[in-house]
Image (tube, one colour):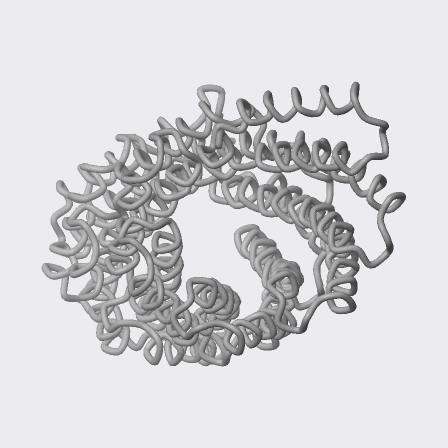
Length: 579
């Protein structure tokens, strides 16, 4: 009961009492003792204490191996338990080994349509999914689905579970229309057969919300995640773990929508619940710290983001094996912030730690490896080592081309990154080629007012500006601005950048009054949203001063240049001395 309520410490207390009684009452190799070991293992697994969970599961397995025939179903269940812990620890090869042992027993002893076979296929599919081997994952999830389709009525809730599992794999593969189709089948069954507040209905809503988030239809994603939350709030205690997950889901969508205060509030609610119900070093706490860090990162509050990411990393380093994929992700998060803070050597160090783990434990074409290559490439761009940047971006692109469909958003990002390098290398024809590849994917797959389309329009506008084709540059910059004005708050930093881009083109075209108008729009946003000594303010003052200089209004020119200089001087160390 306490386990269902998410009160794992209380559940563990009673489970340990039962174990204590059995250890003092029974011989150490009796099946009853194995049951207690399994119960304790389950409690520790729920609490994220995987090494302790593994210890208890292995004790249970040892008893079963001594007392049961080699093909006994309880032995198979015990292998599955051990496999589940290894999966949570990120040791996928061991997880697979134990799950396959369980499957072998079930295949020999059970009818071909037995539910335990379905569970085994699901477990193995889950491991392959975590390993990024999506075709294998899909194969096992489809085997599970096939059994259920043959043996169950068409509206059975377990069939909904299988549809959902297949949908999850398609979601990870980037085949979002297929993912949505399977998740909607699952939802349809749940709506017909389950009470309106059943947790499986909430799971279906969350799954659909996740797909909409990935295709960046955030309002739809929010709607489905909120439906899930409504169910959980109705049926669960206020400190239940599943509520924390729901708050995190909605918080992540709000973050993508630029609603940072809401996102922070929701992630902090999640963290508060987890802090009350979980041990202080539970991996789920690290996830919440990472989510909060992500919001601060998007708000450009990098010191706060770094603090949260470091808290997450500290938990992972204590609780996870040194080669766990979540540890690699955590190193990447820290590296990303250091890169944005301009601390490039630290950024490289963390990204390379991440890459080292991923190369050791993941297949060579895993999407997380592509992310690491991309992150390292970006650092090399920022330190001006474009040849190295290009090398890492090309590795990222190679994985994406092999791992995802030809119109996947990740491919567009890879093309765009390579375009950035060529633009910085002043190889504008190559830059334009890759930017146009990115744009082609985005125009085919995204809504017409999607912000990534604006990014592509800006990139192409930048190339045309660099080759002196001001009319084409202006056309693409205006397309980007149109999207930003529709989708962003009126004081968003990307809107300020867009105004600045257009101002620069008008300045180059000699249309100084228009240039001034756009530069002042940029300045207005930056004065409202940035600290008074922010470097971007200095750039804005400098740009306006430059236009006034071109217009021959020298007193105004001097005034703005002095403001720009004042910020630069305040940013320098008090001991700085120009030589």
